[in-house]
Length: 208
Image (cartoon, rainbow, N blue to C red):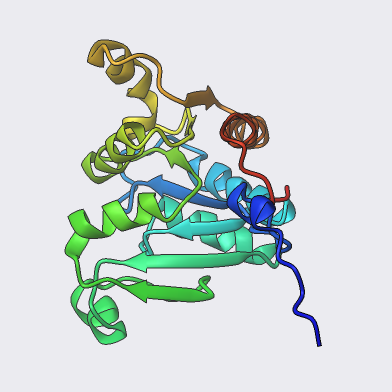
């Protein structure tokens, strides 16, 4: 029986027969005292929009704004993956005191927060920043250095409301950062950047 010919050219160009879903990371404050009023509702709206569009939400498997986004995504039947700083489920719950609900899968890295942040950002196609403190800034700078598409949900307080100035004062150019105070508009902008990047790089085979 003759072997089926494989189209290597298509495979090399990313034109696979299967389709990958975009993975959107929500980065934000685990402790939300610095967040503006209404941030929870906006974070949940981001999660719902991610799920409605058939995308995958990735979080740091933590409390606060990422947790709210996960809650919103699950309310729409979305897929949520958590990247934990802990080495096991027991450590995740007992040592780090982090939640496991509203997630379909949690990956236990054992790399503490700094190592977890790197893996979290590297695992996603784009990042959305909501509110945030120093850990969120760490995730933002990793994403910026990696030239990832980043959406900043302004009006949520914390780091999110200061990132325009940080980017401007860093003198490294605007990066691939977009801004909005509206969750739906922000996700539209982020997806437009992803699509533009993939078309420029000749990578196909992903669907919105």
